Length: 274
Image (cartoon, rainbow, N blue to C red; front, side):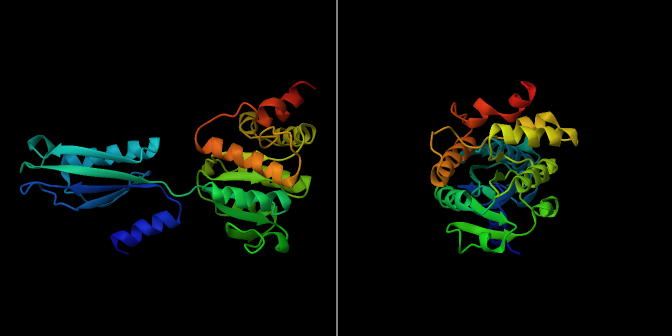
């Protein structure tokens, strides 16, 4: 696999990375103009911009940019003795971060899931629809979806999902909602960016209490957006999907919405208030 094929594989897998490129290197610099290296969040480096202290420094700059989602930075660097290179010279260095479209997994391919697929795709999510019914998990039935999975919800603990994905639970039955929620919460290695579950505060309070009785930590349940979406006053499938999409977009941009349903009617409040 060559360098550019490697970059393409990262993007296809939804893996963020930084591309570091040498610009305008002087003739005596150890690096040459157009030298490149790729840096991923796990500190892996592929390629090289000449080695030494400058390469190490640019790796750290790239990691910082990946953490903050800074899109682009240009640095001017001198290659001198303190860098362990000793040949002098200088160069401008371009660092670009490539953050692939985030993954949204929708559990439940019914009316809400279908509408949400369309809106979420429009605002920049790669959507996977997961349903235990064959007719509700097809790409053809969900315009805008990248993938469809038909499997029992009990298989979620063994289903491969990317880290930092968004998970929306809108299945057609309470048992499905609980299986999906428990399946995701028991996989902390996924570090989900968002987990939201549909349902009334009363229904969800029963689910949450049963899950706490089975060992799910309260602090993990407190992070769940439940009831899902924001309070728009609308109850149709389309209106609910729009409210969920608005909340997903806010989370993606690190915003908190004052009208979030979970802020008003979180099931843990119902449990604690009796």
